[in-house]
Amino acid sequence: MTTSLSDATVLIVDDEQSLADLYAYWIDEFAEARTAYDGNEALEMLDEDVDVMLLDRRMPGLSGDAVVDAISEEDWDVRIVMVTAVDPGFEIVDMEIDDYLVKPVDQPELMEAVERMITRSSYDDQLQRKFQLVEKKVTLEAAKTPHELDESEEYQKLVSQLDAIERELDSAVENFDDSDFTVAFRELPSGGPVDSTEG
Image (tube, rainbow, N blue to C red):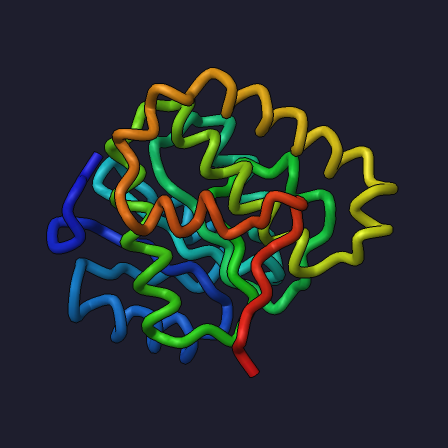
């Protein structure tokens, strides 16, 4: 797995061709970008050189969810970032994805996500799993009310999984970089996400 952005290959998958091409233009400044305009094409273009996939969720034909399932079944070593207009639901807990961005996204946000994925590619499987769970937890806490979180079995399962992994990974903190500290500690001790000052 590539561990530097300049050597990375990013596969962008979106049925809105102009948007996929825009993302590719942004990424091409820093890394190699490939584009696919539907789910089937994405799977055809996926090979061992692809480090990160930016994946739209709602596409005609093979959906983003189905692409994730296919990649999981084939056990591809690729970080997957959903980039979608679909608000996240509790179903993302069981999805084999590494991050979830809600459109619209700008170039800095997109590049930050890609850089995080490249950095994490050097981590062992358990540490990568921790960050998958953290991203899902933060995403859900930003999208759902405290009551909805309390009532969700999926969310409670996620919290339990994260607690178990964190107990096992205390000694691995020395491997974190600054961006991962930012992600890991976006939550207050009370469990809620840090309030953003964005408008």
